[in-house]
Length: 110
Image (cartoon, rainbow, N blue to C red):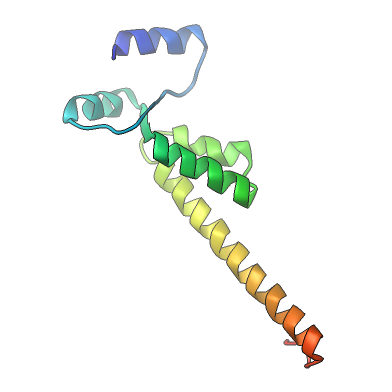
């Protein structure tokens, strides 16, 4: 992998961010290079999880785009996904409880 070629491609395409996607990353050489260049490493599995979560939670492209922001975009996105999932879980619990009360003709919870 050539950092010169990647930089050239970035400039040619007027890209703001660079993400290197692969099955896995080992060794310090690539990790040090991406840290120095402010690029992002993301495994294919991580990207798949992001896509699945974005679809399931209705995340906007701008939300998902934060994963490209070095050095901590992926961890910030993981935090957002966790928060959205908790919100969805709470909402689902409340709706389920209200539905049960309606079906059993119990008083509606406050």
